[in-house]
Image 1 (spheres, rainbow, N blue to C red):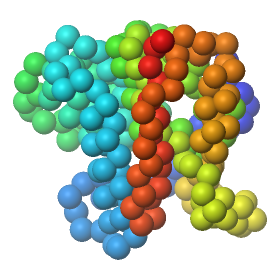
Image 2: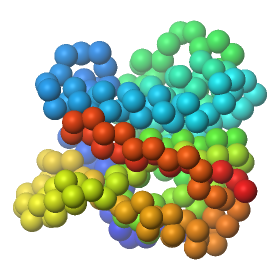
Image 3: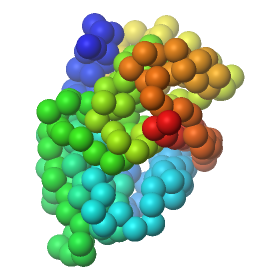
Image 4: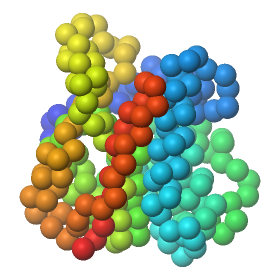
Length: 234
């Protein structure tokens, strides 16, 4: 079950990525030239994608992967190239359309099914691995754990996700952003989350009692900071 906070934030994200920031997101996730700030974000996202992929098996033939909040599909493509059958879902129809337009003609043994929808809809089916790269950075710890509980019902082997770590710089930006009015055209706020507190909530969640925390890593690149976390079925 999702909270009103989750539903409200989901609506903000859908509007932002489907309307407000379409062109900016298209450029950021392409090879086009971007400004210095966005270049650091692009580099950070590339490093994070590589890190999450490194936590998946090198050979994914016969494995199923859910790319939850797939955006323009870069991670889904790399997983498919390893042989995975990937279901890539995003709440933005525009991003899904862009991902389909960018889909390489040859993926080897893998395949990708792009869908528009909620990232932990149980009707998506079951998967060996669930990956949610930067899909949860706009949610607080309680909503993150609710989403992870949904992922735990979908995944059989591992759940890989990222969150915005609570650092002094991110906490300051978050606090300042809440004081600025007329945010209709701005990106939904990133919500900093304390790593240890999140781990504690995960350990206390009944729906995640079959899971344990595994590897974690922080990627910082200029204006991009995100923390990767692995959950493994115990």
